Amino acid sequence: MKSIKLLAGLLFLVALVGITAKAAAIFGPVGAVATLAVTFFIGANALDTQWKAAARCCTNDISMTGLTEILYAARDMVVAEPVGFAQGVMINADVTPVSINGTITSLRTQEPTLIDSYTPAMSLPSASDITTGVETMTIDAVAGAAIPLKGETFLKLANTVGAEEAMKQLYAQSLRKIRNTIEAAIGVKAKNGSSRATGTAGTTPFASNFNSLNALRQILEDNGCPVNDGDLSAVISTGAGTNLRNLTQLTKANEAGTDSTLRRGELLNVSGFSIRTSAGVAAHTKGTGASYLIDEASGYAAGIKTIHVDTGTGTFVAGDVITVADDPAAGAYVIGTGFAGDGDGDIVLNHPGLRGAIVNNKAVTIGNNYTANIGFHRSAIELAMRPPAQPPGGDAGEEIATLTDPVSGLTFTARLYKGDGMNVIRILVFYGIKVWKPECAATLLG
View: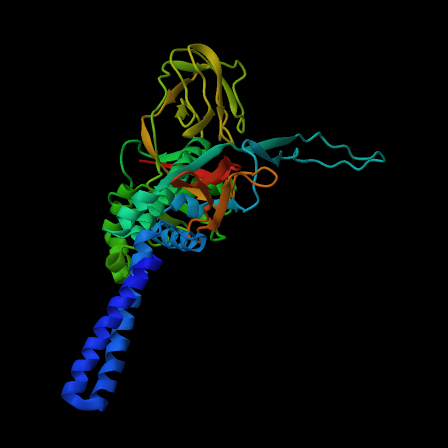
């Protein structure tokens, strides 16, 4: 690089002497001085520009600061995509590293026995035992991407489309893949952890009105879920979102009170729900169970979650929506734990269980396949995210950045691993998802 600069400098001086001599012959001493100054300024700037370009071309290096800036720019490109579930759930995101399969424990208390009589007495009052359950969430999933970076590849990109722009696109695609993976995982957990369902399986809601949102809200209200604190979300498929945007009740400014849906396609809050679309809305394929009956001589009371069935064949799977013949509450219950079949076995409904008492030998029917649009309270579902733990003294990589997406709440780390003639940039996060309160989540079938 130094020899190139020396040769270019010598050539520049030769040219400068020749131009100055001609100017002196034509314009005299004053003209020669002016020509010398202008020519030197233009030439020096041109040489500086060429030297910088040559340096960029011939040194295959990306500074750590440069990498961090590219990562932040890529993040800005990715967060614009809709992430309805991630925006609605409770985010437990931190930069503190954890080990895979770490657990978070929470208590679930039971209702006490109602006191419905009182008799004065000299003895102390007694109380029935109350069982306190324990539930856990495991940070057991990994989402990440690795970007290989060879020196020769970077050089080729620098000489064509631009290496920095290409790197931004690679980062953006990596973050998009991670985000979509986590969003879809939340959708599945929400589907399998919901309390009950409303709507028609196989039919996209909101074809003519948004009444089904009120039915969804009723399930949450009946379960005792808070519905007026501003933390309700309804995450729906893009098809359901299109139907909502076609409703004249929302597109007529005089009826909706705003032209936001008509002009900008914004989904307005309806019945207390913040409406969001997501590509992570899960599709459910029902179990194969058929001809099963309730198998309990005394029947089951309201609130029971574990139900024994018999006589049938096939499977019940988590997320199946079942109905029981002659159920006074006409509930459509979501199964949390299925049964492999055949013969007799237990199925477990999500909390709060049966809405009404059911009797023995009544038919249990599995509903059709569906798309799981979910209405839920923020406290119902938690997403925990942490970077992976590093050994004492660190590993072979260098941390470029730990980033928290301000829109979705996703947190991830990027590390640079240097090899022979190439580097690898790895973006990685550990995460876990838990539906802590199924009673604060309900399914709108689609």
